[in-house]
Image (cartoon, rainbow, N blue to C red; front, top):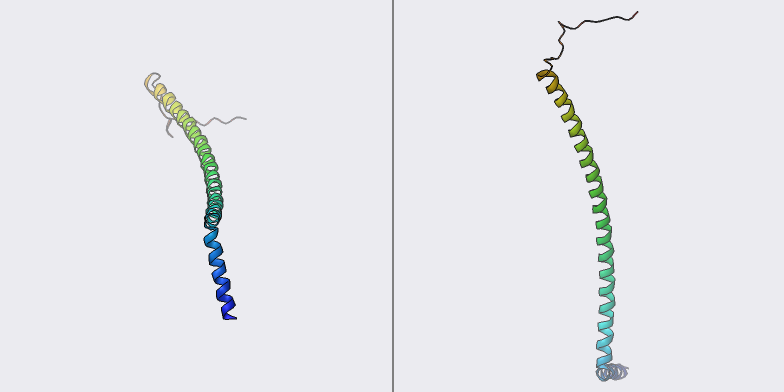
Length: 104
């Protein structure tokens, strides 16, 4: 029984030596397939990350536009207040110079 195993092992090794090029091509083919799977996975992961970053960019652009509108609105109020104070000599009313009018 041991001798038949040794003979079988020798036959397998001899067969592998005889078809060495085919074995190398098979190993290269398997490595290439696994590398292709790895690259596909990485590509999909990067595409998902790119989509997430694009969504973040869109959200930040919307926030930036809202902040610009808010800044413009605040600028407009301070501009009106400055013109009222400088050109029209207006001032913010105080409790002493405020009159309450009741409507019947």
